[in-house]
Length: 200
Figure 1 (cartoon, helix red, strand yellow):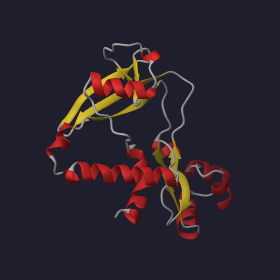
Figure 2 (cartoon, one colour; figure 1 turned 90 degrees about the vertical axis):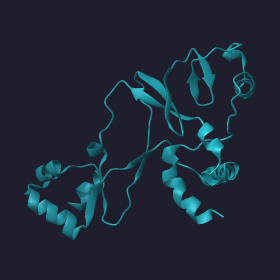
Figure 3 (cartoon, one colour; figure 1 turned 45 degrees about the horizontal axis):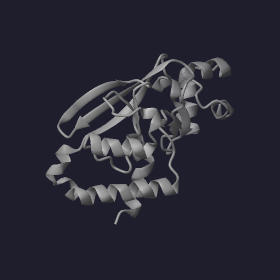
Protein backbone atom coordinates (compact mmCIF):
# COMPACT_ATOMS: atom_id res chain seq x y z
CA UNK A 1 0.00 0.00 0.00
CA UNK A 2 2.78 2.42 0.93
CA UNK A 3 4.59 1.68 -2.33
CA UNK A 4 1.46 2.46 -4.33
CA UNK A 5 0.79 5.87 -2.77
CA UNK A 6 4.50 6.74 -2.85
CA UNK A 7 4.73 5.90 -6.55
CA UNK A 8 1.52 7.78 -7.37
CA UNK A 9 0.43 10.34 -4.71
CA UNK A 10 -2.75 11.02 -6.74
CA UNK A 11 -3.96 7.41 -6.69
CA UNK A 12 -7.64 7.06 -5.76
CA UNK A 13 -9.48 4.66 -3.45
CA UNK A 14 -10.94 2.86 -6.47
CA UNK A 15 -7.49 2.34 -7.96
CA UNK A 16 -6.16 1.08 -4.63
CA UNK A 17 -9.03 -1.42 -4.40
CA UNK A 18 -8.25 -2.64 -7.91
CA UNK A 19 -4.49 -2.93 -7.31
CA UNK A 20 -4.66 -4.59 -3.88
CA UNK A 21 -7.95 -6.51 -4.24
CA UNK A 22 -8.85 -5.36 -0.71
CA UNK A 23 -12.16 -3.94 0.48
CA UNK A 24 -12.61 -0.20 0.89
CA UNK A 25 -12.93 -0.61 4.66
CA UNK A 26 -9.63 -2.48 4.91
CA UNK A 27 -7.89 0.09 2.72
CA UNK A 28 -9.28 2.90 4.85
CA UNK A 29 -7.93 1.30 8.04
CA UNK A 30 -4.48 0.70 6.53
CA UNK A 31 -4.21 4.25 5.20
CA UNK A 32 -5.48 6.17 8.20
CA UNK A 33 -4.69 3.90 11.16
CA UNK A 34 -1.45 2.19 10.16
CA UNK A 35 0.18 4.50 7.61
CA UNK A 36 -1.36 7.68 9.10
CA UNK A 37 -1.80 9.44 5.75
CA UNK A 38 -4.57 11.63 4.35
CA UNK A 39 -5.51 13.18 1.01
CA UNK A 40 -5.10 16.94 0.63
CA UNK A 41 -5.53 19.41 -2.21
CA UNK A 42 -2.38 21.43 -2.96
CA UNK A 43 -2.73 25.21 -2.69
CA UNK A 44 -2.40 26.86 -6.09
CA UNK A 45 0.15 29.67 -6.28
CA UNK A 46 1.28 31.85 -9.18
CA UNK A 47 4.94 31.28 -8.42
CA UNK A 48 7.25 30.57 -5.50
CA UNK A 49 9.14 33.38 -3.76
CA UNK A 50 12.82 33.51 -2.89
CA UNK A 51 14.21 35.41 0.12
CA UNK A 52 14.89 38.60 -1.83
CA UNK A 53 11.35 38.68 -3.20
CA UNK A 54 9.90 38.19 0.28
CA UNK A 55 12.00 41.04 1.67
CA UNK A 56 10.90 43.29 -1.21
CA UNK A 57 7.24 42.56 -0.52
CA UNK A 58 7.67 43.14 3.21
CA UNK A 59 9.27 46.54 2.55
CA UNK A 60 6.39 47.40 0.22
CA UNK A 61 3.79 46.44 2.84
CA UNK A 62 5.55 48.57 5.48
CA UNK A 63 5.63 51.58 3.15
CA UNK A 64 1.91 51.16 2.39
CA UNK A 65 1.05 50.97 6.10
CA UNK A 66 3.05 54.14 6.71
CA UNK A 67 1.63 56.00 3.70
CA UNK A 68 -1.99 55.28 4.62
CA UNK A 69 -1.68 55.44 8.43
CA UNK A 70 -2.37 51.73 8.93
CA UNK A 71 -5.60 52.04 6.97
CA UNK A 72 -7.08 54.99 8.87
CA UNK A 73 -6.28 57.54 6.14
CA UNK A 74 -9.16 58.69 3.92
CA UNK A 75 -6.88 58.22 0.92
CA UNK A 76 -7.44 54.47 1.24
CA UNK A 77 -10.82 54.92 -0.45
CA UNK A 78 -9.07 56.44 -3.48
CA UNK A 79 -6.90 53.39 -4.13
CA UNK A 80 -7.83 51.53 -7.30
CA UNK A 81 -6.48 48.01 -7.28
CA UNK A 82 -6.78 45.26 -9.83
CA UNK A 83 -5.76 41.82 -10.90
CA UNK A 84 -5.97 39.76 -14.04
CA UNK A 85 -6.61 36.12 -14.72
CA UNK A 86 -6.48 33.82 -17.73
CA UNK A 87 -9.73 32.07 -18.66
CA UNK A 88 -8.65 28.92 -20.49
CA UNK A 89 -10.56 27.17 -23.26
CA UNK A 90 -10.41 23.87 -21.42
CA UNK A 91 -11.60 22.33 -18.16
CA UNK A 92 -8.78 22.74 -15.60
CA UNK A 93 -7.86 20.06 -13.10
CA UNK A 94 -10.50 19.84 -10.38
CA UNK A 95 -9.68 19.85 -6.68
CA UNK A 96 -10.44 16.12 -6.24
CA UNK A 97 -8.11 15.37 -9.17
CA UNK A 98 -5.27 17.32 -7.54
CA UNK A 99 -5.54 15.62 -4.14
CA UNK A 100 -2.41 13.86 -2.91
CA UNK A 101 -1.64 11.39 -0.15
CA UNK A 102 0.49 13.04 2.55
CA UNK A 103 1.47 12.27 6.13
CA UNK A 104 -1.17 12.96 8.74
CA UNK A 105 0.47 16.08 10.20
CA UNK A 106 1.88 17.40 6.93
CA UNK A 107 0.60 20.80 5.70
CA UNK A 108 -1.03 21.14 2.26
CA UNK A 109 1.50 21.33 -0.55
CA UNK A 110 1.63 24.18 -3.03
CA UNK A 111 1.35 23.82 -6.77
CA UNK A 112 2.56 26.38 -9.32
CA UNK A 113 0.06 27.22 -12.02
CA UNK A 114 1.32 26.26 -15.46
CA UNK A 115 0.28 27.77 -18.75
CA UNK A 116 -1.40 25.56 -21.34
CA UNK A 117 -0.72 25.89 -25.06
CA UNK A 118 -4.42 26.23 -25.89
CA UNK A 119 -6.77 29.13 -26.43
CA UNK A 120 -7.43 31.48 -23.53
CA UNK A 121 -8.59 35.01 -22.74
CA UNK A 122 -7.27 37.43 -20.15
CA UNK A 123 -9.76 39.34 -17.99
CA UNK A 124 -8.94 42.10 -15.53
CA UNK A 125 -10.94 43.16 -12.46
CA UNK A 126 -10.51 46.61 -10.92
CA UNK A 127 -12.03 47.66 -7.60
CA UNK A 128 -12.08 50.39 -4.99
CA UNK A 129 -12.53 50.01 -1.24
CA UNK A 130 -16.32 50.10 -1.66
CA UNK A 131 -16.54 47.44 -4.34
CA UNK A 132 -16.14 46.51 -8.00
CA UNK A 133 -15.13 49.28 -10.40
CA UNK A 134 -14.53 47.67 -13.79
CA UNK A 135 -14.37 44.28 -15.50
CA UNK A 136 -12.35 44.27 -18.72
CA UNK A 137 -11.57 41.75 -21.42
CA UNK A 138 -7.93 42.54 -22.20
CA UNK A 139 -6.87 42.62 -25.84
CA UNK A 140 -3.25 42.27 -26.92
CA UNK A 141 -3.52 44.87 -29.68
CA UNK A 142 -4.49 47.60 -27.21
CA UNK A 143 -2.34 49.55 -24.75
CA UNK A 144 0.05 47.21 -22.96
CA UNK A 145 0.51 48.03 -19.27
CA UNK A 146 2.70 46.57 -16.51
CA UNK A 147 -0.27 44.50 -15.30
CA UNK A 148 -1.56 43.40 -18.71
CA UNK A 149 -3.51 45.18 -21.42
CA UNK A 150 -5.94 48.06 -21.02
CA UNK A 151 -8.42 49.45 -23.53
CA UNK A 152 -8.07 53.24 -23.44
CA UNK A 153 -7.07 56.16 -25.72
CA UNK A 154 -3.38 56.85 -25.96
CA UNK A 155 -1.49 59.73 -27.61
CA UNK A 156 1.35 57.52 -28.85
CA UNK A 157 1.73 54.01 -30.24
CA UNK A 158 2.36 51.61 -27.31
CA UNK A 159 4.92 49.73 -29.40
CA UNK A 160 7.12 52.86 -29.38
CA UNK A 161 7.09 53.17 -25.58
CA UNK A 162 9.33 51.47 -23.06
CA UNK A 163 8.04 50.04 -19.78
CA UNK A 164 9.04 53.26 -17.95
CA UNK A 165 7.49 55.33 -20.74
CA UNK A 166 4.10 53.69 -20.23
CA UNK A 167 4.28 54.38 -16.50
CA UNK A 168 5.18 58.04 -17.15
CA UNK A 169 2.26 58.61 -19.50
CA UNK A 170 -0.15 56.94 -17.10
CA UNK A 171 0.98 59.26 -14.32
CA UNK A 172 1.03 62.45 -16.42
CA UNK A 173 -1.71 61.85 -19.01
CA UNK A 174 -4.21 59.91 -16.88
CA UNK A 175 -3.15 61.37 -13.49
CA UNK A 176 -2.60 57.89 -12.09
CA UNK A 177 0.17 57.14 -9.61
CA UNK A 178 1.45 53.58 -10.01
CA UNK A 179 2.84 51.90 -6.91
CA UNK A 180 6.31 50.43 -7.40
CA UNK A 181 5.20 46.92 -6.51
CA UNK A 182 2.06 44.88 -6.03
CA UNK A 183 1.38 41.75 -4.01
CA UNK A 184 -0.18 38.71 -5.66
CA UNK A 185 -2.91 37.34 -3.41
CA UNK A 186 -1.62 33.80 -3.83
CA UNK A 187 1.88 34.90 -2.79
CA UNK A 188 0.56 35.64 0.69
CA UNK A 189 0.53 31.89 1.32
CA UNK A 190 4.32 31.69 1.38
CA UNK A 191 4.81 35.31 2.44
CA UNK A 192 2.60 35.33 5.56
CA UNK A 193 4.96 33.37 7.82
CA UNK A 194 7.95 35.41 6.67
CA UNK A 195 6.07 38.65 7.45
CA UNK A 196 5.10 37.46 10.94
CA UNK A 197 8.69 36.56 11.79
CA UNK A 198 10.27 39.76 10.44
CA UNK A 199 7.75 42.59 10.87
CA UNK A 200 9.09 45.36 13.11
